[in-house]
Each structure stands twice: as C-alpha cells, then as structure tokens.
Length: 399
Image (cartoon, helix red, strand yellow):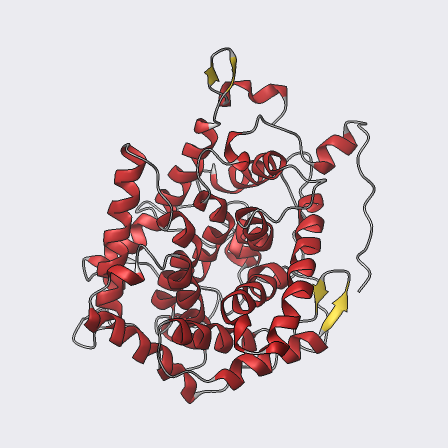
C-alpha cells in the first residue's frame, strides 16, 4: 500500500516476490472469524456456544441466528476451500477447516442432531439457506463432492423446505432463485420459475450505470453488493444454459457487476475508510462482496490493477478488524461497523448475521501466484487521485 508497506513484501532474487504476508493476513483473518463457527457446529455445540447479541427480540433471533452464521460463513470461505495452498501449513489449515465444514453440514441438517438448524420456521431461513447454497456452490469440489449421501439428501431436503414460504418482492427473490440453482446443480428436481421470475424482475428493477433497485425503488445502501449483483452473476453463470432468454442476460449482468465493482473500488478512501451509508453496516467489509467477487473471477476492468484492489481491501479489513472490541472474549463477532457499536445494528441483526463480512475475502480462492496476490503493491484509485496522480477518468456505462 505504497512505500510505507514495504515490510509486507518478500524479496526473491532481488525483486518483489509473492505478497505472502498480506495473503497470510487475509487467511489469518478468515480463520479468526470462521473457525469458531465451524468448530462449535462440528462438535454439536453451536447453539450453546454462540452468543446471541441483537438489537431486536433475542428469543426470535435465537431461531435463526445459527443458520445465519453457517450460511454466511460458508459463502465467504467457499472459494478458499475450493482452492489449494500447495504443501504447507496453510494447506493443512484449509483441509482442516474443510473437514469441520463437512461435519458441520452433517449436524446442521440431521434431524436427530441437537444442532439441527431451522430451515422451515419463519421467513429468515429463506435468506440463509440461500447463502448456504451459495457457499456450497463456491466450495463444490472440496465440500459437496466429499459429503456422504445421507448428508447430501438432508441438505437438499432442507433447501426444498424453504419453498413453503414466499420471498419478499425485493432482493429476496434472489434467495429463492439461488436455492433453486443449487438444487439444479445437485441434480434434483428444481423450480425454474422461481429463477426466471427473479431474473426478469431484477431486469425490470435495473436503474442504470451498474445499479439495481432493491425492488422497484433504489436504496442508498450496499445491497447491490451484499446480495443482488453477486447472486445475479452466479445464478446466471450456473443456470444460464437452461434457456436462450437466460443466456442473453449473461453479458449485461456481467457488465453491470463489473461497473459496480469499479464504483466500489473508488468508494475506498485513501485511509481505507468508505461511506457508512444505508442499512446493514454491521456486515462490515462484506460491503465489498461484489468487488471481491469480480476480483476473484478476474473480471476487473483494465484500468483497475488487481494489486490495487488487494491493497484497498486490505486497508479496509485492517481498519475494521484490527481492534480490541470487534470480538468478544471467546472470539465471536460483536455488532458494529468499526468496533463494537450495538446501536448500528438494525432489529434484524444478530450475531450470526455478522458473518457476511467473510464475503469480502473471496479472492483467497485465487492461487498465490495470481496477479491479485503476486503483483507488487499498488495504490488504489482514490489514493492516487488524492496524491495528485493522473488517473483514468470515470464514466457511466451506456445501457
């Protein structure tokens, strides 16, 4: 991140080598956040171990918060689980977490388990079954392929159980669609109309210049990143071949998330801060889910270097995680944006909700040799502009 961070570089043959210290920091952050969830659930004690901090009704949230923690955590760490760290300590850690995830899924979906999670009572399970589906799709070869037949069947049954309720007429349509795309990928009977309806409605809700409304209205918040753009992109990528209509949506959806990621990269200030606007700020750096996905998919536009995004996101993560009040004494996340700020959580926020922050770490699915990790540190756009450097002019996309 500029000349002040040369210590983060490792010299190889007199030149700047792989940025292993930065990547190690990301992995350490992932493990610090995700390990408590999967360690507790794999041992059958998530309900008794995880606190339920909330701004709303604690009793109500206790029905949902554990599935939130599971689904959102797997959505964030899925690409890393599906990668390889070679033959070293990090690979041992990756395989160890993958084993915990498989055991966690077994306990979460087995009706005889005391940590059997709620997929069928209330509306909220639609949301987090979708994040779980997204995580399974992202970790397919490492997690889904290695699950036993009974657990696979249980997971599909849990996903299908969400069909008993209708999603809201907003971004929630994508939750139902993501669940159905997972069921399709799993080779089971799926409801393609839920997918088609979600895709068509979001096409109608597109507002221009890479941004969608959350339903008919546009909201100044990060839901284009938390949910809308990543789920649209992955739904159309996995299920796009099903119909010619869906195939025709692929290019516009990809172009829009690329534009949105371009805007997000410019949102990150020279000091690693970004505008605290809209709802769900307690998801912290999960606000950059879309940018992280575009970087992971190697879809960044030519004017944005992957190393710039690495440095920008690292600055954000450090500002939000390297504080004494982010975690409780047992390592669980606490409600807040920058530290422990209970008042920033809406009534629907609880401890399990907070693990969506892990979706900001998707580029860990890229190999250490990729440009995102291997290229020398480079300042991001706002830092270069505020330092007086010349930069490519920003402009809207014409659709």
